[in-house]
Image 1 (cartoon, rainbow, N blue to C red):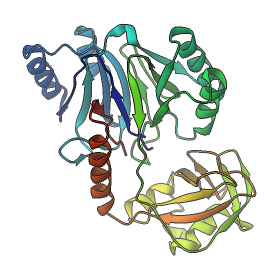
Image 2 (tube, rainbow, N blue to C red; image 1 turned 90 degrees about the horizontal axis):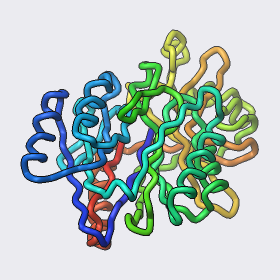
Image 3 (cartoon, one colour; image 1 turned 30 degrees about the vertical axis):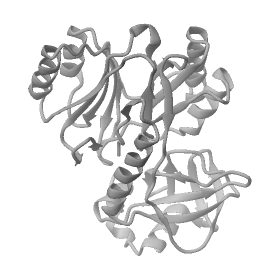
Image 4 (cartoon, one colour; image 1 turned 90 degrees about the vertical axis):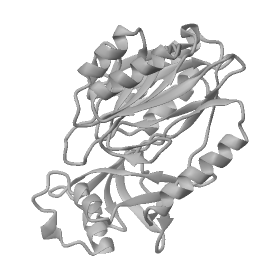
Amino acid sequence: GDWSSDVCSSDLKMKAKTIKGGTLDEIRLALEKSLEENYAPTLAIVFLPYFMDSAGIRDLFTSHKIAILGNSSFGSFNEEDYDSKSIVCVLFDINPEYFKVRLIESENLNLYDVSCLVGNEGKNNFKNPAFVIISAGLSNDCDNIIIGIHDSAGSKVPLFGGAASAEFNYGRTFIFTNEKSIDQGVIALILDNDFIEVKGLAVGGWEPLGTYHNITKSTGNIVYTIDNIPALDCLLKYTGVDAEKIKEIANPISYFIENDVMFQLELHREGKSPVMRTPLLANYEGNYIVFGGSVPQGSKVIFSLLPGFETTDKLINEYEKFHNTNKKADEIGRAHV
């Protein structure tokens, strides 16, 4: 999933720092070095490679009384480059009075209800809350998170976030705080926007190809037919992939990733800006595709492809320009792929 990058800044003196390591011991040494330099972080946003266990990281930061907003990652950008195998932690020394971290499982609640709980907590704790939210779950319709926060906390509240990620055939994503890790639900960083100003920027490199297509049958974020053709058949036809190559794969979307034919749908909405919809799962027998956000029946879409590594250069350039116009910013949130 995509982590929509965010900027936290404040008129108060606040410092942010990024540490990175391939192992828990490397992160421990980097954190201890920071502490020796009289840096006292209170919050860590952690991008943990999906194949690593979160227990060690949770114990480490808990021992130093550092709150955690953590998620599984299939790769992260930091100041240096893109890395799919390292732990990346963004540390902040925010006054604990100005933020709260909340983890809510959605096993017995839908995402809308979970998000309303988060929104109400933000509103009850801060006069002007801002939210950074990460979801876990392979088939989540993340539009329900946005709607839930806006319905409960107000349509104008600053809201950023994304979805935890993993390799497509791994079978699960996860999020975690100091206390525990879960596979289904949301984790929220709720900030007092009167003291911590939150701004953001979304950057994409997807290029639309071809003509409009019609979503002829869908429910929420599950698309059954496109132009009256079963959704997966339509994708195979559009990309030229042989159906036999994906027949035995648990999640056929992984085949497209591994063979550099990754796609998204550019969803066009009347009176609104287009948005991208990322495929999460496909079902060969049912011939449908599950996306990361709702794709309403009757809407128009365009297939979009990722052009290559020039997207990374574009990302870096756009954030440099954004940072230059926000000189007070203490930290630019790391893009998460």
